[in-house]
Image (cartoon, rainbow, N blue to C red; front, side, top):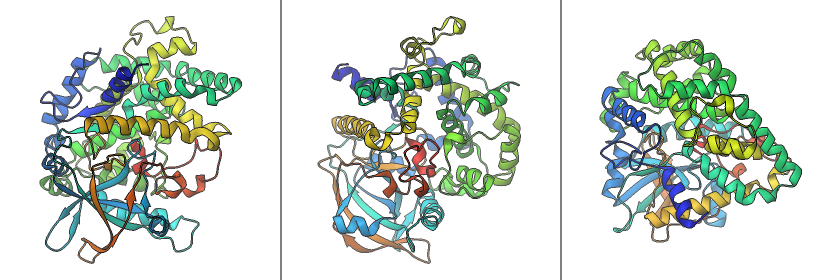
Length: 474
């Protein structure tokens, strides 16, 4: 594969929010281009909070491109301070330092509601489960100054679009596996797709009709298919999160919208109030509540949500996202019965889906600790190279601009300062000590992040390892 082709793949994995036609529409001439345009229009214009897709405080800060203040939370501050380095995680926006926005005021730094949830809810829950006695999560404030020639467009990374890259990288590195392991992996992922054909064909049929509608078989097939296609649980959750942020009419949501923020607490409450005991370590690959249970949970979390509308919307939206993100441009339409179920032929139709499945299946191999990090590092280097080519210093989560923003650790001309901060009784963050830390483009071991459940550390098979919600991006 040429450098130009690789560049195009990374460009396709990003979403442009600068396009007047809507997110991701530039150059989109695929089989669902018309449906993509219809969805962009519906979400932006029909949803109560749709205006935030293009106009929000995070985008305003990126457009100004002067100095931004970001919050990064770490449970390993003593280790970081000792070594003097900040390192990104492969599970956060491909390979960036995961942060959330802060707004300077005369009294202190006001946290974006996402930052507030992470610092006051998730981080303490994660620290409470740590095997290290007395471990606490430390807030770090980063003051980032982007150079004047840095990129000013609004382009975010969408981890659901990384399937083709996962597949391409596997083909480049597959000889890290032995011949038997290669055969085992190929057979495993092809079987997962073959046994999910009923759902995929129904989703593709629904996706071609942009009007939301309920389909009797859809909830059952969705729940049955997620264990075979774990990434489908991520799609379900992303579609639900998007819906809640866009369609909530609660007083809290409206107050946050006036501040230019989506309400991130809604989807977190769905997880942690709907599934007690999971706060901070829910595995989205197992997210598959039936629509009846979901309706019950939504009634508790946000009574302003219309359950019937949510069911119809989610049916159509999940179908569209699964088809658009998992099926290749040559997907079989009405020729499902003619598919040859061998790896190379399946890759022609379901390449992106195979990539996602391989990315997760690799974690099941007993030799995972010996080589899996090479796949993450290989992907991270490609992302850094693309971001630097584009001049992107601060990549953000492009699935929905909810406030998840990263720092590109390979951006050479980034000017930054770091402070250890404390949360005051006024709810504001107050920097108390400047720390000499260097942001370096080397991935941190996932057991040293808030993103990975400590119980999974050291296990060879992490396919069932649980991850914090903020690790759901990539």
